[in-house]
Length: 124
Image 1: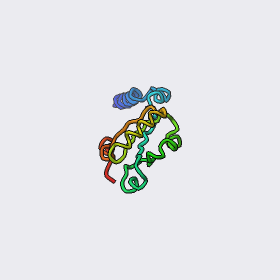
Image 2 (image 1 turned 90 degrees about the vertical axis):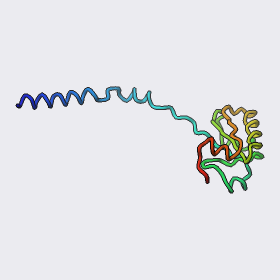
Image 3 (image 1 turned 30 degrees about the vertical axis):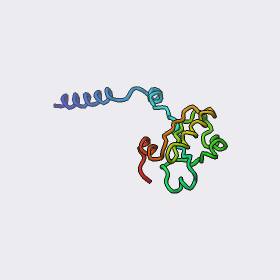
Image 4 (image 1 turned 180 degrees about the vertical axis):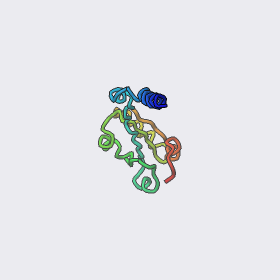
């Protein structure tokens, strides 16, 4: 009876060793996902329009101030940026200006309603 008990304990210990993680922390570190830059949501409407309704996490940078202030909001030219306005006209102009300034990851989402759908964001 004692031999059976010792055999069961030994089997349990060996089974535990067989399933332990032997990859080490260095291997885990290489498998960790790289952090992606956060996408900047730019609302190029007026401050009045923005205060009445805006997307969660959006930054208000009116089209008239875009060229003079964009470097403070997005200093890296490879920063992912989505831009929107009320109906799509100003955001089209904003995207063209950002492209001219050398920003490489700009996407025009058009209207605020379309941006809300594309980004899957809730109503205010």
